Image (tube, rainbow, N blue to C red; front, side, top):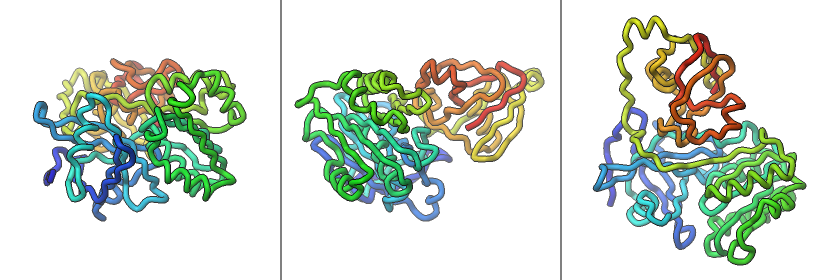
Length: 351
């Protein structure tokens, strides 16, 4: 029995595991019981993830992000799905040690891999455990929207297909709207950009979301470019192991009078509200927003999860580490709040 009673930070909470579902020989889902007093804190959008604090004899703990495979519209409780990875401490620990009734420390839902509207037609790509956030979007779009949904799901072999039965049921229930295309490596080999471009060309007007290993994502990106899909319609989820401790409360450095006098002025739009404040040049946007008591989205503070991605509408920032952003994201004005420091005297930022 794994029991944790007290959270390590003001942002995290201790949740009880109410269900464990063995999905495949090397993957399982964990369902969490969210008490009523934490319900608003753990509201989530389709495609978001939870960050779990996993005990470690060597370091005390490690933090790992796992996508929510549940939908806020169809499932009673949040559920993450974990697939063992070779040498992966977090995934193997969760698969070997967690049982119903155990408790685990969790940060609130985070992430920007989520549709702005569920009324689109969607072209979804998942590979291996990358199906988890895609499944959340798929179920949400089918029940809340009216558009068509096409899923291309790649796996090593037929035994590796997570949610196989659920996908069969959904394909039967939404036969006029859902198309599921399985790509099985043991039968078809690895997909090429040309093959996927031919497969997905009829859906070039859809909104595309993808999650999976790097080489698979590169193939899909190339295929969608060949198929003529605009980059603005393509959304990718990228996870990297977190080296830091997002469960530790942030302690801000003191700002001298000179630094306060030289601070930039920023206007931030967050959750439909606009906030104006000074932004000291040596502090990141996430840090200064936290110091103002704002509920800024963030998780790793290393630039590796994309939770704090936002857009520069006016002004210029510097970033020590671009992390999950590619050059096209940066060219389009995206920044990471946990890495951004002001260069301009006046800035406007939108989350």
